[in-house]
Image (cartoon, rainbow over all chains, first blue to last red; front, side):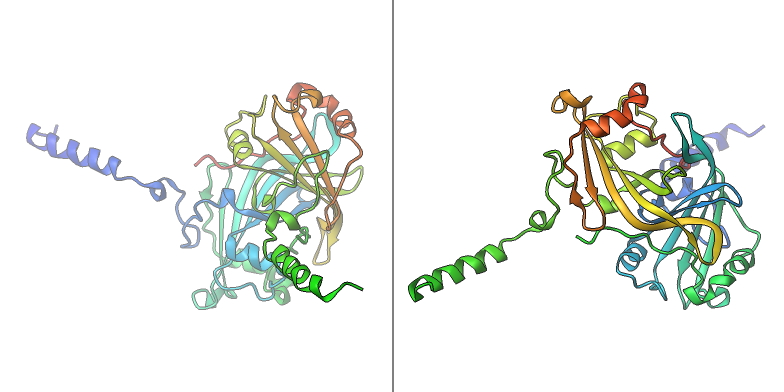
Length: 168
Length: 168
């Protein structure tokens, strides 16, 4: 049992800790020492894809630097500061239009952070992944990511081709 | 031949007209009397889909009202002011990963504008479409759109189910 004289200060600490919580405290932990990219849910679209081998649908998003690079075709190399996000869902069929394949459960989100000075060991990119709808950090090593992306080394390690957007 | 005395004022008019052009003057014309939704290229994602019947990939975007409704599951009915955008590309295969279906040519963009007071004749939505990368306005009548959406009348005329996004 704690003595009474400790209870007031402990209560005070608990309350002040709670009241100073900010958004970053509620975000998922780091993946490969990379912080969770807050606000990606509102980023703009770079492309979409449907992988028939593992039955997943994806949208590829980007932060402002990446989207500007994608829309102007400046993607080999992508500029430093670019962040690419890939949101991956299991595919399913739309009940009202069975020829339409649509997203079901969220599998994971994956991000590539371009910084040629920081990520010299991993081809100029930081690689991160968060699993499932609760976004559990993936920490099994960036080499898993780099290995899979080696076939597109000559495309600055990026599979995605930016989708065509209207010339306005 | 114009007389010289007219040339100076005409030149002045031409110059001032050009210099007062603003962004909306360079946008595509109206579709079904609906103005082009400027800036949709940066809207956030609601879902994606792959239609295997006509071999097209799609991203479904929304303005702020629509995205907030989608993320909070308030979509039957969608709130007034919602705009849903569907960007449709012909599908193709990624050279470096042939099991990945990816976007090729832009087919068209389609938009639904929710306004139950304005669009009483067309089920509470305004329907618009712009064709190809040059976004030529489609003006063959909203009935084309409404007919195709009739099977989802009970879903407020919308096929799209909002994709799962992380609960953070």
